[in-house]
Length: 563
Image 1 (cartoon, helix red, strand yellow):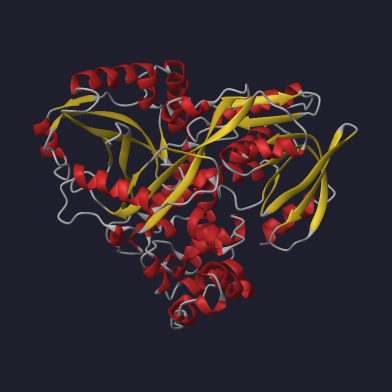
Image 2 (image 1 turned 90 degrees about the horizontal axis):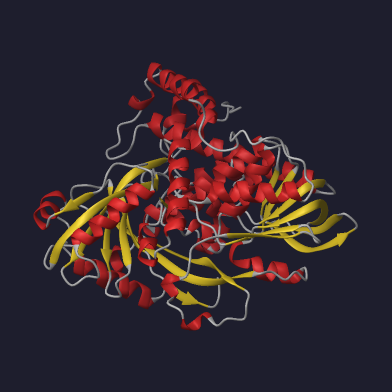
C-alpha cells in the first residue's frame, strides 16, 4: 500500500500537464506514452487498473481475420501492423499461435475459399507470422483428435498472437512503465467532479478505499473511461461526434479440452455463423466469445450464455464426457465499447456483429479534453501515439518519441538474467509437473525487477516455494507484488496481477491454507480485513484459509528485502 499512498500524496494539491481518467488499456498506454515523452501525468481509476473491460478480453493479439468478412481491409492492415509491433516488442509476453479452424460442410465458407482468405490475411499482415495452411479432414483428425470431424469438410490454420499471462497484467505493465517514467498513478481513486478555471482543470478526487477527498489540477484531461466515456463527457457539458454502444461478450474457463496440441487456438463457426474459439490458458481452456447487444456496460454471464456456449462446444468436440456446468472453473463477462457516429441514426437495424471495431480519438480544443472511443489491446500502441499527438497540439511540449516507453528490456539484460538464473540453478529449485521453468516466468512477468527476486531467493531459498499449491505462485512474487504492483484489495492480486481466480476453482481457493499467508504478505496487519472483503464477510472466510499453513522454519522471510 505504501506505493499507492505515495502516489496519492503526489496528486493531492498537485499540478499536472495531463490528468487521465480511466486505467484500462487506453488510459494505461496513454500514461506510458505521455510520461515516456516527458509529460507530467496523473492516472486514476475508480476501481483497480484494468478492472472492467480490459480484464474481459480473449487474451489475443490479432489482426482481425474475421473482419475480412466485412471487407474492412484497412482496419485489418492497421491491426496486423499493431500485432507485429507488439510481438516484436514483447517477445516473451506475446507468442505466435496457430488458429486451427474446422469448417463444416454446411458452413458459410468452403475450406478452399477460407484458405484464400487466410493467404490474403498473411499478405495483408506483411508476412509477420508463419504462413497459413489448408487442412484436410484427415489432417484435422490426425493432428487434433478432440475435434469431432463428423460433417467437417476441412479447415485452415492461420496465425496470430496470444498473451502468455492475462490481459489485465499486460495493462498493468503500461502502468508500471508510466510510473517508472515519473507518472503519478493510483487505483481506487474516482473523479468526483472537474471544472475549468482559467487555463487549468480543477479536479475533485476521492480515495474510494479510505473515503478521503482531495483536489488536483491539470492543463489537459484525457477521458479514457472506456464504456463510460459518454457519461463522463456529459458531466462536463461536452458534445462529441462519436459515442459508444455496447456489445456483451462472455468466456467460460474449463479444464483443458485439447488432447494433443495445447499450443493452438481452436476456431469454429457457431450455429449463428459467428466464429468462437477454444483458447489455451495454461492447464485450462477458455471458450468464447459471444456477441450480444446490450444497453448497459454492467453485464454478467447468464444461463442462456452458458447453455449456448456449452451446446456449441459439445457439438464440435469429441469429448469423453460432454461439458456441463460442473466443469466451469470461472466465468468472464464484459462489453466491447463500439464506436458509432453521434448523428441521430438508429443503429437497431444494423447487423450488430458487423459494426466496426475501429477506435476514435476526438479532441475538444476549447475545453482541452481528449476522448478515446473504443480501442483494443492489439491497437494499444497506436492509441498511445495518437493521444500524444493530440496532447502536443493542445500545447503540452513532449520530447521526441524514441519508442522506448513500451517493450521488454534489451536482449543483453535478458541474457544476463538467464545467466544468473542458470548459475544458481533456479529451475531446479522445484519439481512441479506441467508448469513452465521459473526463470521463464520471472523474466516474463517482472523484467528487470526479476534480478532483485533472484537475490531474495539466494538469501532465503524458501522464497522460491509455492504458497498456494494449485496456483503456481512463489513467495518472492508475493513480496514483489506487495512492493511494486499497487495491490489494494485481494481481488486485485487474485484476478488481475495474477490469473489465480481464472484457473483455480472456488473450492480449491476456499481450501487453500496458503491464502492467509498471501494476504499477510500483501497487506500485513490488514490481512484479515482484506480476506473478509474478498470472501464477502468475516463469517464467510473459510476455516482452512483462516487457519493458514502450519508454521515451519522454512516459511520465514521477514529478513529478505526487495529493492
